Image (cartoon, rainbow, N blue to C red; front, side, top):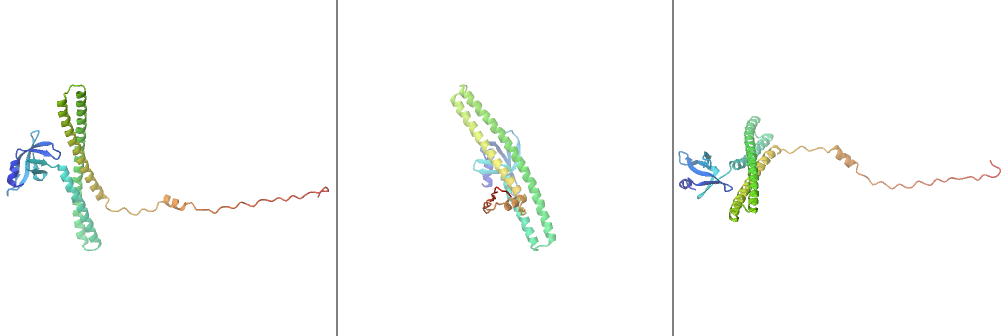
Length: 246
């Protein structure tokens, strides 16, 4: 959208990615050259917050707030593997003696510092995603109880059909949004955790020696033995003794 059109969104409601209204556009912060830099948001509780313009998506009269956790996680999922690949390429160049050892060490230390900072940021995002997942779990549990209570009151005739249908639709839509939101946070947490785990296990493990048990199993493979022939019969000769004896 052009700069002039953005001003038309002042006072418009802001929804999150799941359709939930979180506040409205109060004003904008512009740079000296007239570029939109941030948005002032008035939340439902009356509090104001200044958010980067990149965290909002403007589509006509619709204003959508993009989750900071998701946007930062996506950035980290791109940056961490990139820094790791650069450091590995640097090591390859050093092994091929294409760069001086002093330069390698300096650049390697720089990459390690950046990686350490990115890992800390990633862990913070993982922790924040975990908190959001717990919040969604609590909301889903409360909504489930609310739906059960509504069903009971409707069953015993305390709530008429019209009000029952309206309340049921509202609760179901809210439950659907909360479930979708939880799934997104779980996916974000899983992706970022996988990136951290992958960075730590990029180096292939050393070849394992054949275990003693396996060697014994191989050596103990039964062999086909030749059939044994029966032993020859024992013949006993008995000498007849005459009347005169011996």
